[in-house]
Length: 55
Image (cartoon, rainbow, N blue to C red; front, side, top):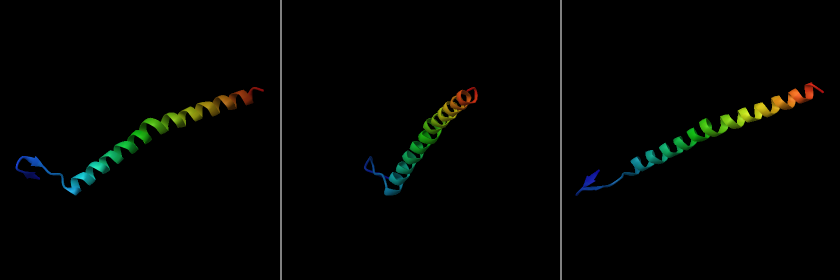
């Protein structure tokens, strides 16, 4: 919305900005944090399993 050269954000556009931030945060968590944690746990468990198997 424009009023004398001043941009006024409506509550709807503010809500969509908040939703976009929330979506980006979830994307960062689910794509960049959780997969390395899961794969690290899988590697640790596999090495544990290998060490127990050889004894």
